[in-house]
Image (tube, rainbow, N blue to C red):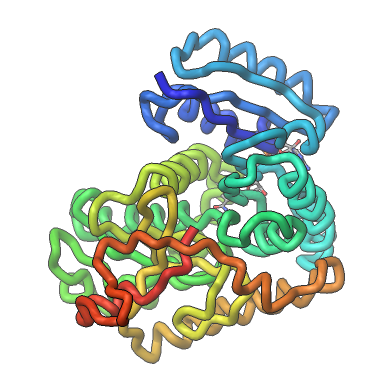
Length: 366
Ligand SMILES: NC(=O)c1ccc[n+]([C@@H]2O[C@H](COP(=O)([O-])OP(=O)(O)OC[C@H]3O[C@@H](n4cnc5c(N)ncnc54)[C@H](O)[C@@H]3O)[C@@H](O)[C@H]2O)c1
């Protein structure tokens, strides 16, 4: 059997973790031959609830669950972590403005970024789930100068899965037969769920659906699905968020199925004209434990407008917390892990399979 990997999780006694931890322990995230050590982190007042959850995990007798440790602080909880799932965040309270929410979470994610920098494994892969997820990822990464910003990601896979599920339901297709959906931008109602590159069984989706349905119904439905669920259940989506976390981490670590595209909130390197240095959801493929932006997609005027709109919101969020962040440097834009394995041979003199360059020119991957 392999050596166990360490997975640190904040907000471990919360609703999402209640589903997530059992799926991680049964091998759904890291593979069914990979033992795991769960380093569970909660607020001091939730430690008793966390102890109860740990007992339940123990009672499942999962063969892959090597050890569980419980922590009331991130400095201990992140120790040597190979993976960190940052789920705990401050929810919006009564009378709280978006700016206040950004500021209280900035404090939490500043501390977490520093703790990852000082205590986690040098190659840690970080997924930020707690909202506002994209900007929290920015704050954590800027406070972790020893780590590459490309080691940080924000969860937009739930939006991606929602788009796929709603499209499958509309067309009668099996979700397995749908590919090429893209979520661009922020995990918020400004996100752009793009079907222009999507296909069902290899046939373009846009030839099979009505434009009006796409723009008037599909897009707003995906964008506001989170609040529709809160209205219906009284609490926010938890099981579907847990499933999306499993998909995101599994694909990042073990690779996306051949040819398939998924959406991940990652640091922008300027691709598709999106400003560098914000965490923006892009289409990616994963391989060798790294992700790579899918390049060279043609974008129509409608898509460009939608992408700019959600970029604008992220720039505003960044501006609202900028005074709390360590200075941004050009080096931090460049300090991105390079993937040398693109699947094609690139010759030293710059020649090679030129037709593929359009799609493979990126080398900014984690
Ligand atoms: N990105 C996405 O797609 C997505 C989807 C669903 C929910 N979310 C967000 O995920 C977060 C968690 O959702 P939930 O339903 O599990 O919430 P929840 O309130 O049920 O649980 C959150 C837990 O986090 C803990 N916590 C808060 N601050 C913490 C800190 N600094 N350190 C450690 N633990 C801390 C709380 O004690 C609580 O137990 C929320 O911010 C929610 O908005 C994001």
